[in-house]
Image (cartoon, rainbow, N blue to C red; front, side, top):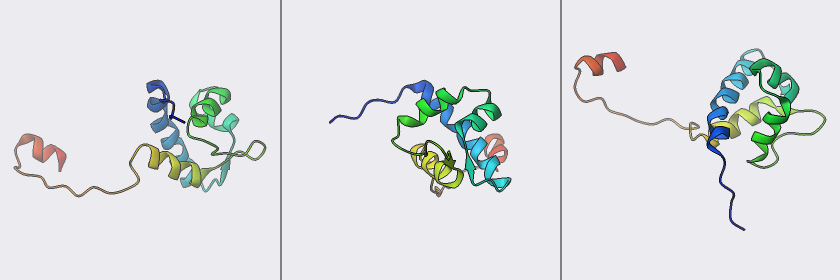
Length: 99
């Protein structure tokens, strides 16, 4: 069965969800509902559930989302779950700005 393509608008909202979940982790929150997440972000809970449904079962209907697990999944989906080694060649204006 071929995978459905995820709409670009959904992909564009994932970093927003990721930042909110990172904030929740800093506040030691373990569980968050789509209602609470929606209120934080000004996005409807139904839209959040629909967006996340593109990636399979991530949350539980009554209890909500495990904040750490959902954050890990979003990092994996966005491919920011690993470090990248880089080298900076040259230290011109742009190089100094990056450092």
